[in-house]
Image (cartoon, rainbow, N blue to C red; front, side, top):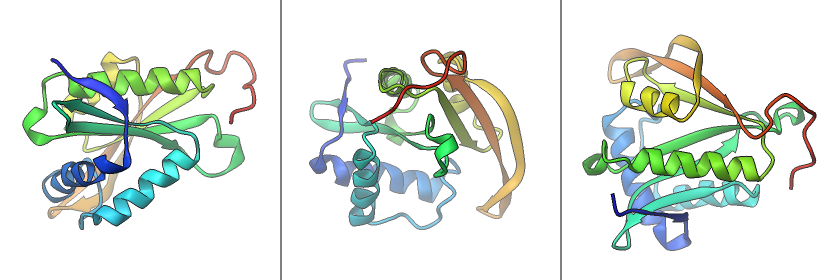
Length: 177
């Protein structure tokens, strides 16, 4: 595969935005219909990093081929130990193991940080590559939200998947951050 996974940098934002732009315009992984500009992508990235959460990129020959990050699942304090993953791979690189490398590194990083659960909200119940990727890395399907999105003239389901991080729910969490 010959890909390195590393923390994202400010100078990665243009390539991250380009990858995301493609998914917004041509796919249903994102329910946005207007791609955000580079400044907005940069702002969102800074918010993730300010929380001490990982924002990773996969690179080959200094070119960003994909990215992923963890964000808070919900804002209320009871959810602080639960994260949601987001992952996007350059359309020309899909199916080459980049998503797996990114997501496995993200899961490992979040375990090390002391988080206990990770949730995946996958746009489209027919998005088998993403569903399979998450299943391969220990996520189980916990539900489906039927027809909660409308994009490209069709109703879109969201598949909910979840996996424990670290010791999961077996013991109370320790303080994070």
